[in-house]
Length: 408
Image (cartoon, rainbow, N blue to C red; front, side, top):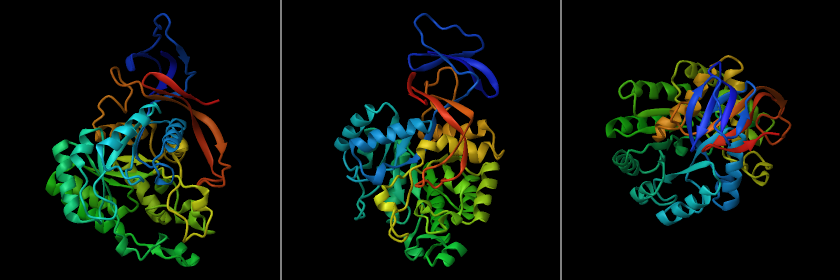
């Protein structure tokens, strides 16, 4: 396949793809005989996005949800997605992991599993080594669980050279909160989720990560203080501690919950505007390593209910690249190259995928053609972004050298 006239870092270039790899980048390249020629017409060519924070619909594993996730990834420009393993049935054996991998291979998109650290109800360590040996890309841990389990998880991860994804949250500090503990929650009469329930756990996990030398990703951070704590520890060991923030926490605040809008009920919760601005400032100064979709779709059955009964989470990966471009690039917060770093290059580095996350000769041919000139208004009332004007859209997605998605 030859991609003609694509915009790569503000230069018009051609990209030749053969045997699933990018083999040449330059001007006026010629396609070998019988090779497909794809005219980019000046659209932006980006590496496929690599999303480190994805869940199946309703956190249930089945073939239909795997297929839906794969299609949603393609629409959002995501070519590699790491699924959080807090789904049912629990990923507790190599046999189930092999079955899941077989089903995922049929979906064509690079969907990889994390391994749950422990049983959901009992503090028992899973057979982490077996799961990691059979293809799990990382360990998923909850910070508030038995600290000894977290210690052992970090030791296993270090031994297997895999990252630990840690969800930093202490439920005992939030009094069954439903949204950010602030003025909006008070006005609505809803119990709040305090920032200390996150920041206290971030501090603990950072200290453990440094002590045990583990590669740790602090997942879904939502406060300035969390990033400050992480940054202080990163100075001591910059290559083993990483921060991840969702696009929602960079683009929206807790005012979105006004009117008891359950589609703004997320975990961690959307914070007040001052915190959102602080996260944007942190993004500009390099304190955030990865931006994700935090894709956690819920059926209307679980959302079209009273706020206190609604489940946390929304589907968002279908518009991930468009959202990131709209709220981070179009408004001048960062440039496209920085977006690539946050959404592709850094995640690839964390996962040890040296041939993904960049457009270079010899790299995997997982690329996205993106049209930055397209504009539309979100009309889906079940979206956090209902009524917003978004800029750009994914036009074509190539995974492993094959055109898998084309926007009409």
